[in-house]
Each structure stands twice: as structure tokens, then as C-alpha cells.
Image (cartoon, rainbow, N blue to C red; front, side, top):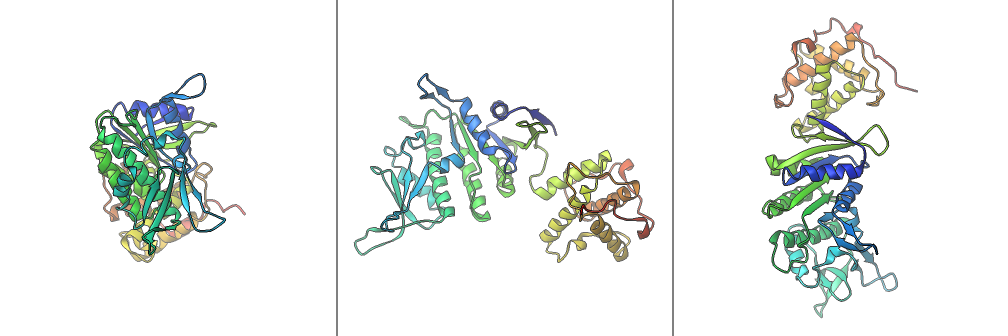
Length: 390
């Protein structure tokens, strides 16, 4: 697993374009606030050409991000409180095919998978009316859909455009698209729809022509996991974090890192075990993994995940050690080193937990001989290494 320091977001975008020469898909995981939305914009800007008057003369990226949602805005008819319309920004090239390609039909084919409401597009007014029922004259009764339903509609609008790109017919108004960049399309969606969105997206893009390249970024672990499992060896996977210097970043190869948070945490704990750099915050990390494992197996308490060979008395002792050392709220970058006694306790608890649950040994191998710790002699030998700050 390699990590590459990069000094700017435009440089990260350029690196992703380079990676897309190797495979059709790049999947990027990053926490909120890292700069994913700005990254998608920088990626788009690389393929953008502007003349002396500031007009776009060429572009190559169709993208979906927070700015895409801003192309739609509500007119709530504050005067009469009746005609609630979603207005479209007619100046955007995003709507190039709106009036000529029966977009309402294409959008409807996507939307019926996710929602129970209907809509129609006014091509003269550049607006969308949503409805579920009609009046006695068969006219739609306009409604304002929820934020989640609005996001689903906008996402289906985007999928309809992607379908046009994929079909690659003659007179295609989107024939300029060489890259598709998708950033977090699942805001305000429940887990069920997050899975459906991921599945439908990959089903659509996997049959597209070979020249099309796709980058997907997300902070949503479940969405990341579904995409990764759908694409398997067709995708390059990365983790983006902020670097130590302002506006610097680290792009880490995640090809062999499991996507679920507790599994990636276990990878980190194995690395700390093997290199001997165990700090106080590793007790916190281990405690969280125990809690997540207990929730998965339906246990009432994380303590049930402690299964030492010596039985209940040793389990109670290990619980005490974790209680004493996982309540300091240690920061990852300011965490005190622990002494040999506590290191021995940590290694004992961690190895017995790893032995008791059948995690994939390819990701979580057994400890090297040098990292194996003897079982501590007596509970009285242990005390917290530091007290929480007042």
C-alpha cells in the first residue's frame, strides 16, 4: 500500500486523469471537508478551454456534484401558495439535450425505480412540476417533493444524460463527454436507495464504450463498498486525506484495504502491532472495533467479544484494561506512547480478539513472533498511562 503526497488539488485531479489511462474506473474515498467537491471541479477544469472573451470553447467532463444540484431551484409561489415549480438553469450546458431528446421519458424510466411521484417538464418555461394526483379536469395537482425526493429526481436527470452519452447515437449533444466525474450522489438518501443508486450506476456505465472514463468520489462507506464490489478488478481505489502542509494532500492506494470502517481500522491496528508503535489512542480504536463487531453479531455488549482462553476472569480483566485506557479521547496526532506493560496487555487483547473471530487472514495476518505478547501476570500491574485532560 503506497501513499503519495501531492501539493495541490489540481495536481490530485491531474493524477486521477493519469490513473484513468490504466483502467476505466477510479474510486476515491475521502471524508467530508477534505475537498471532494472542489476536486471534481478541478478535474473538470483540466479539460476545459476558454477563449479570450471567457467563453467555453471545449470541454471533456460531465460531472455530478453539489454544483449540479444548484442548477435546480424552487419557485414556491409565495404569493398564491399553489404553483410550486422546480426551475432549471437554461444557461448551463448540462441541459443541452433537454428539448430535443424527450428527456422527460428518459428521466421517467430512471425515476420509476426509486420514487412514487410523477412529473412533467415545461420546455418553454424551463420548469418541472411534480405531482401524485390529478384534479377532476385531469390536471396535475402540483406538490413540493421532499429534499430526498428532489435529490433522487436530479440524480435521475443526470442518469438520463449518462444514458445518452453511453448510447453514443448520431447527433448526440453530449458527444464531447470523455470523462464522467461523480461526487457523492447519495446525500439525503437512505441505505436502501444508496445501494440501488450504486448498483444502477455501475450497471449503466459498465456497458459504455471503452473511450469513456469514470471517476467516483464519496464519503459514504456503504456506497463505496457496493461500487468496489460491483467493479472488483475493473477499478483503481484510493483514499484522499489532507496533508501536513496547507492545501497539500495524500493520495493513498487502497487496492488492498477493505472498505468498511472497522476493517480498515483493524488493518491500522495490525500495522501498529507489527511496527511496535502502539499509542494510547489504539485502545480507543480497538474498543470501537469491539463495539462494531458486537453490533454485527447481535451481542448486548462489546464485552462479549472478549473471549480469552483463560475464561471469564481474564475477560473481566481485559474489560478493565480497555475501560481504563479508552476513555481519554486521545487525538491520533497527540497520543502518548504506552509502556511495555500496557503494550503487552494491548497485544494480548488484540491477538485473542483476532483469533476468536474469523476475519480474512489475508487482511489481518497473525502477529510476527517478535510482536507476540505474554499474558500479563496480575491485574494490579496495570494502571492508566495518563489521565484525561481536565
